[in-house]
Amino acid sequence: MGYTLSEKILAAHAGLAAARAGQFVDVAVDIVLSNDITAPIAIREFEELGVERVFDPERVVMVPDHFAPNKDIASAEQCRRVREFARAQGLRHYFEVGRMGIEHVLLPEQGLVVPGDVIVGADSHTCTYGALGAFATGMGSTDIAVAMATGRTWMRVPETIHISYHGSLQPYVGGKDLILYTLGQIGVDGARYQTIEFAGPVLEALSMDGRLTMANMAIEGGAKAGLFAVDERTRAYLDGRAARPWQAYQADDDAVYVRRLEIDVAQIEPQVAFPHLPENARAVSEAGEIVIDQVVIGSCTNGRLEDLRVAAAILRGRQVHANVRCIVIPGSQQVYLDAAREGLLEAFVTAGAAVSTPTCGPCLGGYMGVLAAGERAVSTTNRNFRGRMGHPDSQVYLASPAVAAASAVAGKIAHPASFDGQRDEEKAL
Amino acid sequence: MRLRGRVWKYGDHVDTDAIIPARYLNVSTAEALAPHCMEDIDPTFAAQVKEGDMIVAGENFGCGSSREHAPLAIKGAGVSGVVACSFARIFYRNAINVGLPILESAEAAAGVESGQELEVDLEAGEIQNLVTGETWRAEPYPPFMMGIIRAGGLVPYTRRNLVAGQGTAVVEGRGNV
Image (cartoon, chains in turn yellow, red):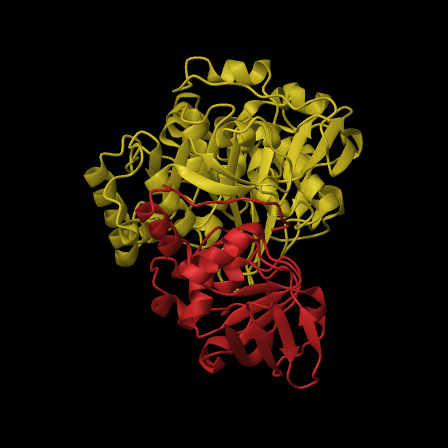
């Protein structure tokens, strides 16, 4: 009987010939990540361990992105703590404001993630890197402190759910819609303690940005990791970017899966996940009349160049509805620069949207777009838990950049196709 | 190790934003986080919770963010332990790592109401409703994890292993964690 991607990667990092789901293993890690919210606790626990140096200053990565640029004095103190630790330890990959990005946009872009890696991060969306065939998972600060000190961590080898996508995509349906639809099928704990292997012809044709969006939200199904097989698209993405040599692993044809799902994408419309769980996915045409106050386009889920291109194509030459605040947040300095060069930022500003420097800010109700009581937002982020973006009586609807941009213009949840045919250049979309 | 306290009961999918809203994550000590614990789903909790009280919940407790601030806030509020049908994976690790006792038992979670008194024998994995007298057995911890719990968390456990020259946590066996 064969092995899954998770079993192969974890066995290799545990120095074992093979490992099976359910087994506890002690694995070497390739990258240990934390941010300005989680690193301060990790640093405190690291110091508590009595270890002087991190196991490898090339492999311990810190990114102040959640409440950075500093949102208040307490956040400034947390960022300073991270900065001072990074300097004292000589961390090569500490990313300062002005040279940073949202961690899960930044690390793949900088080539710090390669296939076959085991990556642990004190951020639940660390699973994003599964798009590149890395076994990447979120942990808490104390686990990260121990990994920073020893370069190792314990894992339970997870069972794997195999989800295969086939059929032809409808217009305006992308990675975000596929993952929201999938969450609607399996539920927010449908993959708890397990890995999802994303596969099938639809995903072979999906861009790397779309794959990163899907892997990013594996955690919203409770998954430990969400993995894609390495293919030509992966290799093209890594060309000239990968910071380290890498090895691709492949699941065996006779690998043992706990569950197999086949999804015919032809039936999938652009999706909207209603409050207050990501599993509350509905087709946008069935959303009804939901008047909104704010739109956020960005985050580790949808803050990449392709996402901004999609949003700009809809916003260009139109105006954000008078009753809507539209906030666009490029996911990294590189995305920001590329978007500027392509004229996307001009399209946003001309349309009446605000463009922010990279930050996680509004996604978790930190700053840069906190919601008041009773307000509704359409957001390209990943969570719509009660109070997630602000007041506990506010509401978040999760959607793709296309739906978010269309909704910003309409002032209510809208299908991007509702603007089709209104302008010539859109027929090419 | 025995825990005894009054029950605060909640439903399924209590997420980490509910346990400690992100707007309070500009601080990181248990003492500073505790006054905001459960604030958005139960504004009475932090003011009324007493030392030793226990949280009982449904499926997938602690889903969402990896923030260790969540078990820290619960611990800081004086809660002695959490019993749930199931826990989200990251929360489970975090709770063990910071020394917050957690037990999985769907039967216990179903058989307890808010305000009732609960007693837990952690070593035996036994949960008793002191009002009804009903007793349940929780899923046992894998042996190495019991070692982390006995050591008082992952940091003292790892420190001991580092001193012993083992370098890192020793794990073995199989389990459903």
